[in-house]
Length: 93
Image (cartoon, rainbow, N blue to C red; front, side, top):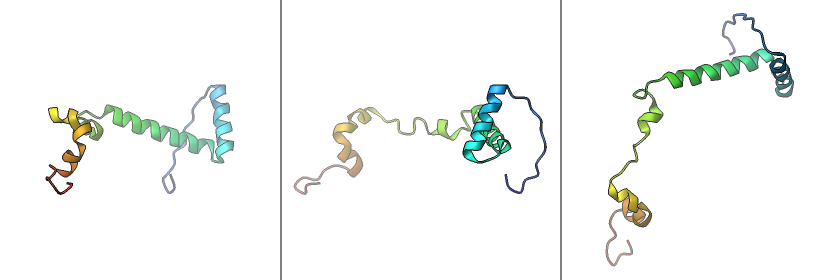
């Protein structure tokens, strides 16, 4: 968060969550505020991805990219031919 201008916020946490935050802060040797900033940033990024339409989501766009015809079910037996092309007789390839 380096050079960014910071805005002070106040929030209320349940006691157990506050204790966990304190322990995490001590263990990681970073401030409680930094932990909260990181967690909030991660949460907001996940929400942004979740709300992205399927047409705009790169992962969903890639689904089905490897979908093949009926030959794809024979890929286990024909993998060399699929990768390298048809074998030539007498050449070992």
